[in-house]
Image (cartoon, rainbow, N blue to C red):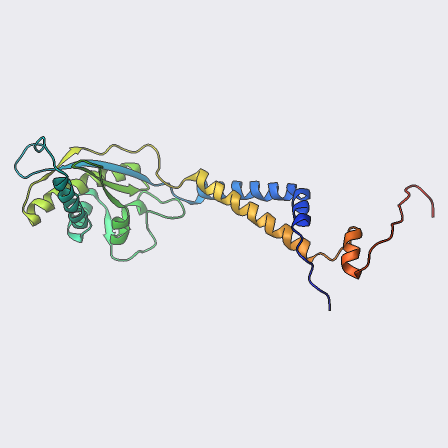
Length: 253
């Protein structure tokens, strides 16, 4: 019964160095394929942000002295307002005023994911997709927070972001009964997509190609039964090689 070839790290390293061209080839191929796939098949998405301010009810922009406790209380309010912004009550109002078509379940016309979407498909999404692409963040050490929306159409992301901020202020006033948030800055149409990151995906593809090349070379080494030198003979038959016969080229036999 044949014994498995022992793993010699030095020998493997030599093989890897010798097969550098294969490693380079698969690394470059993985990089190019991942970049091309990202550019062709993944729809870019854009994020627009509307800036809001949270202050005390019936005051201007708040008093000059703001304590740490007030900031913490405002942060908790923002968490509550975020959940309010994700309710169907608010989403339905946003959809009505922006032309979005919100459905319960996906019908294959999602505005996100693989492939390019038509302008009509871009207006269709589910409640979950709307919620997943709504981004509400606080601005560190301040009473400012942003309401953002991510979409494949930069103009739609701007329109929805502004309308969502507007509907949130109305919902807080009507449901919570306070008027302590106001819009400071309208969103601008984003010029650069936030996703996908083509370079990052390409680097991941290149890394996968590199790892694949290493695995292939090591498997070729482990499965090969070719005798390449004296050391292979010694390992195969278990005795030392006394000498070798040199090869004379050009002699007729």
